[in-house]
Amino acid sequence: MDAPARLRMNRTALFPVGLLALCTVPLAFAAPWTPILLLIPLAVAVWVLRVGVDISDDGLTVRSLVGERRVPWGEVAGIRVAPRGELWLVTTGGTEVRMPVVRARDLPRLAAVSGGRIDVPQPPA
Image (cartoon, rainbow, N blue to C red; front, side):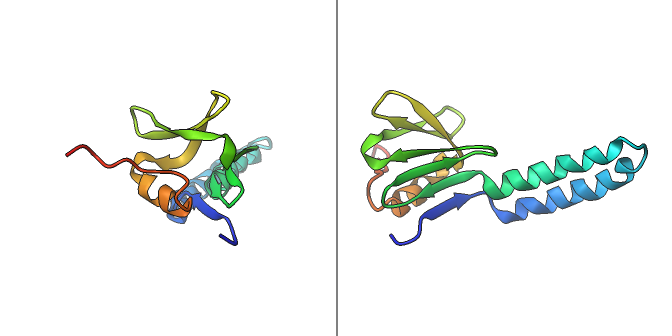
């Protein structure tokens, strides 16, 4: 793998963010302090563009709005699927890291881009 594989939110999610920004403009100029309301759609747009998981030969990098956590492949114990379909990266140290944007339905894609380091169990027959 040369460049890391990036699992991000679909960019079509920016369309409702644009509508939110458009609806915020009239309120933003209603009073001298209200232009700060324009930061809400900006923060949501940054969240859509930044949050996700990067998978490289070295390991996984889980990115949130303001931070990131790097987990080398040697520290990956497995993946836990939460009841609502969220995925949690389980480390050998016993900690768990929530993998934003990636859901249980994305497990085959996650396994494919991991180069076989993450295995997807077959459903029982």
